[in-house]
Image (cartoon, rainbow, N blue to C red; front, side):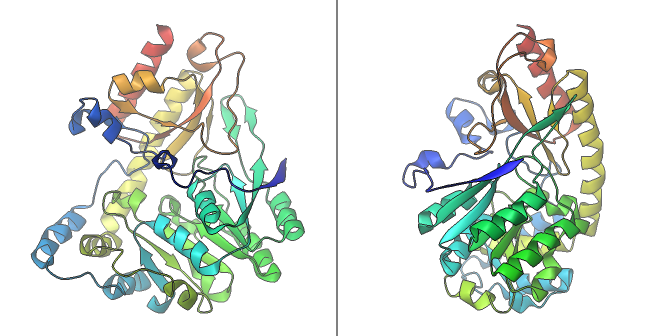
Length: 386
């Protein structure tokens, strides 16, 4: 069940408090924790860390810091083109895919934007800064035993696109924060309707490296209204460098270039990106260990009777009482998702850890190494029993 709710965004586009995302280790460092003491489950970053080849590329690039980075990113775009078998002319790199979200909205200037929620908040903020009218397509939570779901009703979304006629639709796939995935064929059905209606469909594939067969990146070339954004932050642990890219149809790419600032992607990021793309062993190892460590997380969820949403990627959304303040005292960060539009906190009987009658909230945790996962769940048990 879903519906459209039109409104102008309530985002405060001035206050620094709007930048509420995972990975805020700095708040704990201010409280006296050392970097190595912090367990950060709030940012969904590959626990294997940065590939060794990327670290070597960064070290080598220190010899050339007296030069500007290439504003056209030619070497990096060529590496991406070879990897995806796409003409480099249709690729633009950005300072993380978030830069490209804002860039696309500025360049294409949609008057009306449709955003399925819950999802990544920067789609809304970019649209609000642009002055666009924002429509929210909301999905209703369903649950069964341990499992919950916020899966997009594809048929309802297509009807919403047809009836409301937005200029742009954002689709995060796999979705953040739910981890839900629309299959490639399902996304292409939405893309075909968008093309027929003249609606730009922005597919954010920030986490698609964990399910690469479901990407629609090569379909962009045959659909002038389809844009695919990719991030290298999550899979390759490049959060501090900031690197992403977008693939655009030939009718769109020059419009976007026209609004792009020069030199937004630094030399370290460009060189590290090339090394990451070419590291096949790292990709294969990541997929193996993430699958194994996800099994541990799900086993612990079930053992403790914690309701969660099955995930296709390296993070989970789950319901628990508000334990985040306690975990911070232990140097552990999880993502409080109460600020995600469309997620509902619940009250009543709390099933988590066979506990008392308290209300629950949604939290997101990244999949980390087994010893770190066990530490987190030990602290959840300890807090619930006190």
